[in-house]
Amino acid sequence: METNDITQRDSFTGRIGIIAAVAGSAVGLGNIWKFPYITGVYGGGAFVLVYLICIAIIGLPVMLSEFTIGRKAQRNAVGSFKKLAPGKPWFLTGVMGIAAAFMILAFYGVVAGWTLEYLGKAVINSFAGKNPADLEGMFGGFISQVIRPIFWQFIFMGLTCWIVLAGIKGGIEKASKILMPVLLLIIVILDIRAITLPGAGEGLSFLFKPDFSKLSAEGVLSALGHAFFSLSLGMGTLITYSSYMGKNENLGSMAIQCTVADTGIALLAGVAIFPAVFAFGIEPGAGPGLVFITLPNVFQQMPGGYIFSLLFFLLLAVAALTSSISILEVVVAYFSEELKIARRNATIMATIAITIVGIPCSLSMGAMSKVQFLGKTFFDWLDYIAANILLPIGGLLIVAFVGWYLGYDKTKEEITNSGKLKAAYLPLFLFLAKFIAPLVIAIVFLHGLGLF
Ligand code: PFF
Figure (cartoon, protein in one colour):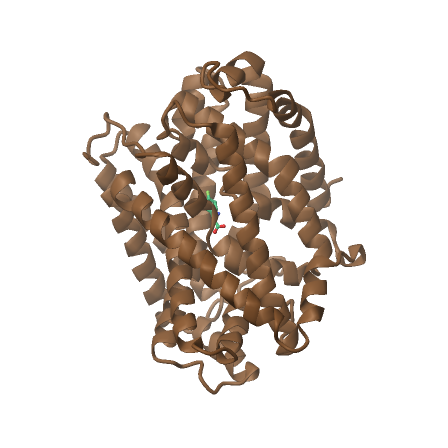
């Protein structure tokens, strides 16, 4: 495989490899770190319900739209629009996606670095004998340091860069295929421990019993933004990945499988965390530290907790890695195919630039925590702008592109593999893509920003 050659494109090797890579991109810190923490911040069940509705009526059509665009064009996020709509401004959707990728990876690398620190802590058994308050102090003490979190961020970004340099088949597929099922198993074991803790019922009802009085307009926008973030949508990641897919893959069933897997893992993570949050008297709205504070308490309450804590943080780091490589790949494919920079240089340049933007994100937790604008730190702003603004706008443009610009015939051609597949869902998909998804995104978006 020639990764430096910008004219010959890499590709995935088979169906399982593709599903593993797309699911590997989708399943990550978004499911296990961000979903529980924002569910806690936005009040629980009602937020979860809105999130699930967003996944079904918006996430799924956007995912299938990205697959359609990417596989049809066989280009990167920007080049795909240029190829399918030459001379039109649609390619700006891809440019926005590149910007979102930059921002997301900047803070993602920081949180992924935390998982490495926690892996280290698990190895030396530092959770043992600590009470909930100690574990909270441990997390707060760590993220507010200057050097240590940045050190781990650098290590993680270095790993991401290294895998992307190794190319599609060698790196991305192999890692995803083996490790994702193991992660699922660990989470299920944690679920069993969590729901058998005394007082677990309160956590489950927090998670699954909707109380709409707790849900704000910003909460609804965040649920939408998180549907995009969690499914890796709205910025061309899946356009880029599907550009490496073969013409005989069933795009519709792949979209459903990946969506179900991603949503299932987020819910299972919630079930592992909220019963424990209530059992240990942790504040559900504790913020970005929720998982890092809650689960070490759970590990202490289970036989073999040492091994489980080790495996959990190892696999969380790996899940983060299979997502971060997909984000970096968006930028690298663009640099190498559109700007004609050799893949290797593009990868290294992008990694360095993104890592530098990540430094103030890391410092937002300590040294720069007082540097705020409208009550949000630099870290919060990058997350907010990328997930709640750029991804929804990107998603809207992507479904609208398929619904209105590509239209029925071309979409049918791509989705049915030139008539080889049935795709009875096509009218429903196009109805969602043309009307429902764009309308709902627009309303939630304007309402969430307070403009409507
Ligand atoms: N979906 C990833 C997660 O849930 O952790 C994060 C992510 C990957 C977001 C790729 C966006 C993206 F394009």
